Image (cartoon, rainbow, N blue to C red; front, side, top):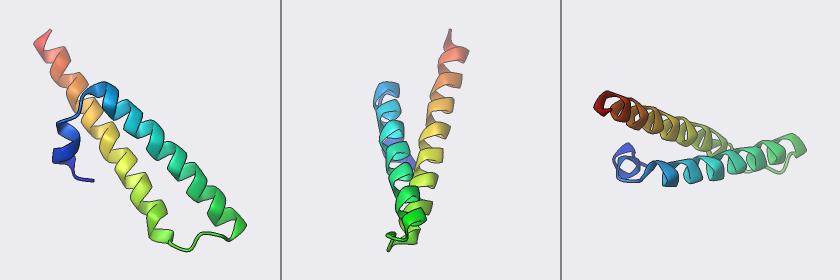
Length: 68
């Protein structure tokens, strides 16, 4: 997931994406704890994508605050 793709989305879409990434991260963490996780890089990718979405949301909130 690229930051440029995320910047095109609305804040509501970003919040939905963040929710999905958190669920995915939880499921991956659960799989890792039970020894079923094959692709450990997926856990890292999910965490980083969630952080990327949070960063874009904060950027949009700061831009909206400056305009108001």
